Image 1: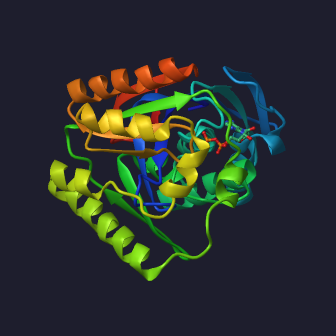
Image 2 (image 1 turned 90 degrees about the vertical axis):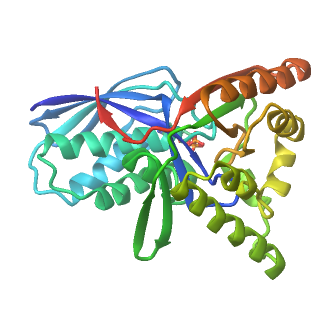
Length: 306
Ligand code: ADP
């Protein structure tokens, strides 16, 4: 096999109580990429459509993640990458993670799978380091494994795949405003109270248990963030209103996707997820901010060949 076309999903990271540790992959939105094996050493981005992003290998997350893989490989040749962005950069639904993950997964396929999924996560995390300054794994892991993932530990890297209940749907609205990931990190407190910690890990445990047991009510009760959302939501106009109308429309829970500005809600069933989308749209229509909306099943397979 000399080339491969891949779909690499968008992802929601953090998921309310799971700041920096939980993520989930989406079915209906993701980047498409074509990766070719070539004799010339190194990595070249030969085409990039859909977004205005750098194509220099060292400036593009797909290039940087690919170089991390090549550095650990005994393969003598190189790769060409075509990226067709369907996910807007800076949206908060794992735009950078999709490109990094798609690149390294495809290269591993073309090389006959010399690397484990955990190794691929580490390579893709180098792309995340370029995008945000931090090599986080909470978008990369679900993009690669599919479904929900928990980053139980970074040192050593330990990723736990969590099953997704079959009727769980996500609604994501992306208001077209810009929040720099670095700004949304800067405003966070570095210390939390023990009381907040107790509430947060109670909910995180509840959410994971709810996902395993397909207990939608428990999932809903647990989708609460006592630590990050109260601070970060200030950067997202209309957040409180979007959340209240989503819950009124029947969503199980609602919160900030990644570092924003996208807002996600989970619902039981497609019909409710669509109703939630309608309610979210009305908020931004009234405020006068353009938006994209995605209604999606959970993607249980992660990155795949097209
Ligand atoms: P998201 O929150 O959607 O993951 P990030 O803010 O993490 O988006 O990443 C976007 C940043 O990564 C931008 O600064 C962008 O210029 C940079 N970047 C470099 N290469 C890519 C790529 N292939 N896809 C997306 N973003 C990229």
